[in-house]
Image 1 (cartoon, rainbow, N blue to C red):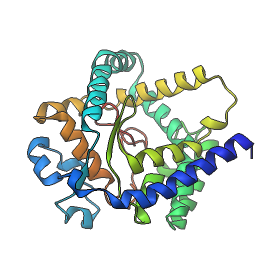
Image 2: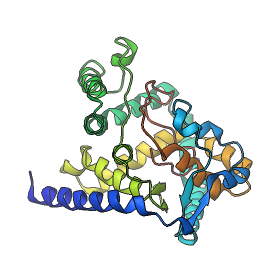
Image 3: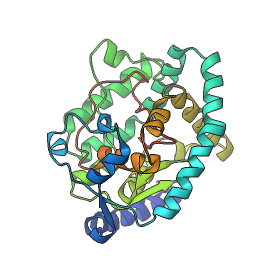
Length: 282
């Protein structure tokens, strides 16, 4: 392994250990209940995982948001970025690019993230799911022309087994931590941010010898493509909520708190979770 990569991995492992311990000590005095926020959030029940009986039976969740002033500033920045740039570009892109092509691009990017799901399924001791993801990667990369098509699911009924490092930390008892709303990246948490960084190390991007400008361009195209498949979701949340910031925060915590299962069916976007907001971190 390249020494630089080894140092990065070592640093992230150290941070993960700290997060694993620290996320379990969230100060209750900095918390508010999701139950109270639901009056503001309105119609957010669709974000509750219907397969998670334990989550559905737990109406009171603690949301720690000690950085609310900063988070709100970043939320307003993302909101303007979405309406002034990302949405217009995505609408224009949608007009010239047929939906089947956009779905195929989404499958391609989703296929690149297969190592994330394979490794995290192993870490969560879901070895069968990891094997299915490995088979999906091999089949879709070869017979699916690099992942643009999904014969593994359509022909062999090998459905995606989603898993993230954020989810893995939760499996081992790490709390979600305090809320963070990143500029551009959108809603997250202390655990989610660490998970996102670790998952990125499992993708090809850090190891490709290409200019940073090329990487940014490709990732921007990925975001535009995904947004073109979900235009209207964020608008629905914003119009239904008295405080969209609270609505998104609540939705994020509902999806992430006690996240222990994989999604066994590919959605209409080609396997990647559609972001309901600018920009919902999958």
